Structures are given as structure tokens and as C-alpha cells.
Image 1 (cartoon, helix red, strand yellow):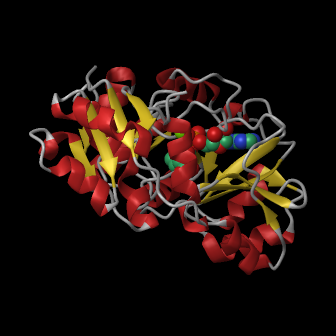
Image 2 (image 1 turned 180 degrees about the vertical axis):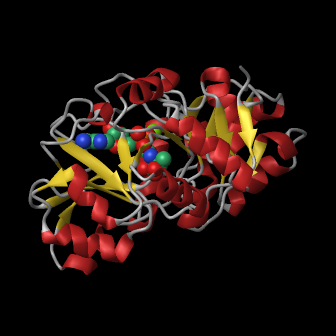
Length: 329
Ligand code: TXA
Ligand code: MG
């Protein structure tokens, strides 16, 4: 069956909710990226999600909940800080890692005794959650290790007929996945950089929050090769610029650049309009379009996409994290 593109109206929502009740996994918009949602209490629905993404079943999924009260169903030993943080940042782009409730069975945690929970802010996702009533397991709606989708079109391109439907909510607001904050041990740790920064959390609870650049223990989802476009992604450096320019002129390279001087070097060539993307100079705006620009440039099937690395200051951490894992090793 070809994938159905559902409109964001009561009829589209009804079809989406019916499919979820029938144990199917379907793509829904969130404010970060599109998620592949399924009933976390149905083994077959969760398995269908892993299968559609070709994701290993020990690689856990985030469970999305419609409000804070649901925390008690999924988690136990919840620190008070979790509620203070949820008060401040939910609904929103922040996932909390907590101890899984021993009484609750879900395959979504990949066998771990911890659970990742998030209350998303997207009105469509929230409405589906409220109507479904049980929470929804939802990884990003892309094939394993590929770029996350920030539009319904990206979902169709990536997962195509592996899934029955995608509810079209337009472009995602943030364009990058949620921050993941581990509250299972102190000091608390950011496991994945995202729109909410360590400083935002520290200001909220007045405690230090670690943000390790590298993990000594294996944190699922922090595998180095992730978020990859089809083309090779390479760093645009001063020393390789003349080579890149030569390949760019014959249509074999694409470029993502934000400094005026670098951008203008490429702008006059015949491929300028199609193979060159001017990136925003502001971190949130950059994050919003990062994946969609890579999705777009991927269509040209060039030998490589060259990317000029943005500054390394705190606001840019989430962007750097995604670029460093998208770069070809
Ligand atoms: O913004 C987002 O978080 C999106 C939208 C759809 O909500 N979801 C998302 O899910 O990015 P996913 O599955 O692509 O990434 C979730 C990450 C994975 O890297 C997974 O390993 C990690 O969360 N994760 C989930 N449960 C975990 C757990 N119990 N312990 C450690 N990591 C966990
Ligand atoms: Mg993902």
C-alpha cells in the first residue's frame, strides 16, 4: 500500500488515531522533527516501528506523553527536579531520562531499566496524544542513521511505503531533535545536545549539569555515525577550498556556507544557484534548516557536500553535534 499523506484536519486526525488503535506506526509532526509514532504498550506496534526504520531493537525509543501526570505511570524514583524542569520546559523540545517503572512493560526501552519521556509542544501531536490517551513511542521518522525528517515530504522520501501514513503538519519549528537530559544519576548529564541548553537547565534548578563531549559508557544514540546524508559530507577548510571550487564548477560538489567571503567565492559559478546554500548566521535559524538543506542537496547526487563549520560557542552546540555525526569519517 502506498503511504497516505493525511491533511492536518479532523478527518486526517481521525484516520491517524484509528491507525494507532489498530497497532500501526504512523509519522506525526513534532516541533523538533517528525516522529514515527506507535502504541508503546503494544509489542507488535513497537516492533513495527523498529522494523520500518531498520533500527536495532536494543536502541530505545522516546515515549511521548500528553502531560506531567503520565510521568508516574512510566517512571519511578522521580527526583523533584524533574517536575521543576517539566514545569519550565514542557511542552517542548526536552526529553527526560528517568528510572523506568518496574510495573510497566514496554519494548520501547530496548530492555533498559531507564525510560526517556517527553511532552511535545506541537498542537497536532498533542491532540493525537490526548485523544489516544496512552502515550506514544516515537523515534525520528527516518531510516536508521539517516537524516531526521523536518517535513512530511522528507518522511515520504525516507520511509516511503514502509509505513501506512504521515500526517502533514508542514515544516518543523526547531528542525533538530530534542535535548536529552539524564536525571537518573547526579550530577545530571545532557546525553544529546538540543534546543534547551545545559545553562537553561542550570538556571532552572540551580545545580550543575554536565555536558560530556564524549561518553566513556555506551549511550545509545550517541553512535558517531548518525544523521548522515546520502552524499559524503566533508568539512570546507581553507586548505581544500581551491579543490572544492574546481569540483563545484563542474557540478560535482555542493557547498553550505555562511561567511560572506566564502559564500561569494562560489556564488558566481554556473552551479551557484542549485549547488550552493547560504546558511543562517544565527544558531537557532541554522538548526532549523540544517537537515532540510542536506536533504535538498542530497538530491543532486554530487560526490560530496562541503560544509563550513559554524562557531563553537554554547548556542551552537546542538548544531555542531549533528554536523560532527553527519560528517563522513
Ligand atoms: O525530538 C525528538 O526527540 C524526536 C521527536 C520525534 O520527539 N525523537 C527522537 O527520537 O529524536 P530518536 O529515537 O530518533 O532519538 C532518541 C534518542 C536515541 O538516540 C535513543 O538512543 C535515546 O534517545 N534514548 C531513548 N531512550 C533511552 C534510554 N532509556 N537510555 C538512553 N538513551 C535513550
Ligand atoms: Mg533519530
